Image (cartoon, rainbow, N blue to C red):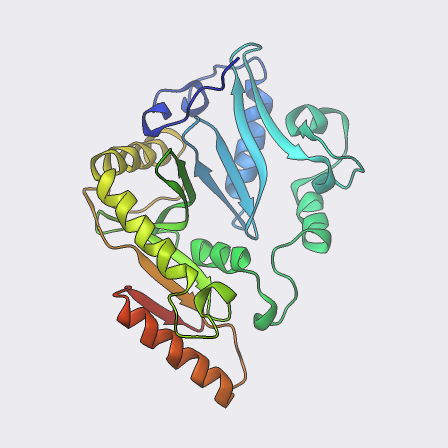
Length: 280
């Protein structure tokens, strides 16, 4: 059986998973888990085009929320490793919690100890995904989405962050300043420039669909799930993606200064809109 293609139009505001009234056989357990997840300020939720929800912690997607129409049940898939089990499969967390004495704090502690995207306490060891998560958690009012992905014959897009400020949607690509994709040994065009220019073509091609899609995302977060959300519903699309460069270097060095200057010269030459930040 051919897998159904997921497009902007696949997302439905009235999908069962987004409804507030009981729709599942295990609705009580689902509502209890939902409240536990929503009350945790370390987590954030992202709505997906296939009418599912990803719950993220420290940059990693740890729980996938899904409504099973066949069995009329809510499901919360989590990898066995995240609950401290040996194995290599995803299990239904709702069903697991019914028969095991484990809490969300237990799960988070296990992830922090073994699977966190943080990679150490030093800022110089922070991973890109951990940095991304910290931007989202600190500036929830600015970000409507993260890890946006879209694949067609022409495009294969994956963008780190999606802003919605004053109703304007803007795609933001996050990179660490020391990422190898940011600068080559020569002054040739680095990979990140190609990425950002591909995003610009994608935005131009799908401008109308993108706006309608993020209006649905906003409506689901605001009116259906009561999630943290941007204050204003999307009304426009910024055609220029932004490159957000995080400088995790903590010690000044001449070679680092030269590296940064060379990189900036190339980004300006290529007409890339970018900002460099050293703190979140």
